[in-house]
Length: 493
Image (cartoon, rainbow, N blue to C red; front, side):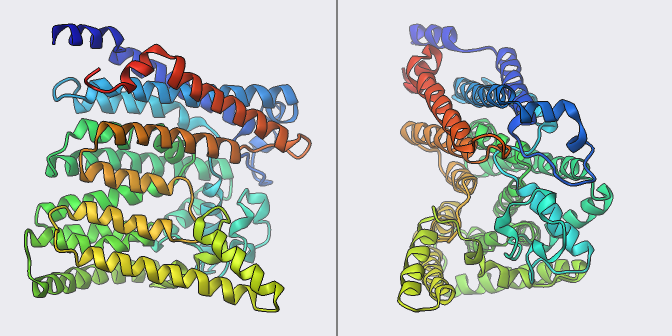
């Protein structure tokens, strides 16, 4: 036993070293984002006319250097995350405050980056702009207003309704107004909101983990410390952290037998991303306790549904957006990604029907609708399951069905599922390693896919270089780095 402990200490980085190495890795990512992150195009952008940043993006050497720096930073940050694992193995090795300080240092440089791994933040501002112009983002795409493309949004959202809830859209409107249309200011304000969401995730992950008999530090390492989470939520300025914090707080309040607070928290999460409305039945199961009758289930479901409806009605009235998000939930097929399994099936079937003279749009809607019905059937069966000893686990499977059978799957959607599965049950070491490797694969994929390469460079050459480099670095990390290999052998190694 003493030999094992000495071996562990010899391979363990100090907390100070972990903090500063993670900070340095994020700093590399931030510097690299100035050359290959999503750059504002708006005429109001002061940076779009700044020669310093333009040099990074117009010169091939500058772009290649930024690709190398970002790949190094992503892999280095992942190494820091893996090497932090021994510190959360047993209680008392690290305090919640120490872990929070480390994650704050890993995140700090990202506050100054251009958006990376996604450019959805520009669509947030575009939808806030629509709302400010008295147009409903649920009824029209962002192309309803001129100049949307120069705002930096992905053309995916040109004709698609907003998938976000009214609470978040109103925040986007306020931020658009406060920024006076200057993209850098808007992105900065939204990033502050995203960082608050990450802090909320950290707080409620710890709280919910304690309710479920889990190690709060391990849960926060697995969920919030994940580089995919930090780089997506803060670097990519995503609103998912707000949503996850809302869902986790709803579950925690439900375990405290506080139905009003639980339903209010879930309503706020729904008002950020409506899909988490599917967690409502499982909130009711937590409130019920063990072995309820079917009559008790329906009674509590009616109660939590009424309370949630009240909160959503209040939010809808205050924002004047009411329940427009309900229809938007079922029109996601308009923005389907072909690499989502259902999106791919819909695309293939509808194009085959089109070749035979059928209505492509109608056939695609029918295919998507069939899979949505299948997802609802799975969710209903989970809610009616006999064993309700772990409602959060059931909610994880329910959201998995909703996400995996949807026509659009963004890589960061996997974070929701990882978070719910990790918080609902202390997973095996094999599952932890799977989580590490899946996160790394997704990081490589989004890093390559979401590089912003100017039109005068060959995008496929630059992205091929990025893919080979990132993949090679990750393979080297997992096979050649002694400290990483030691941790990945498992806690008993």
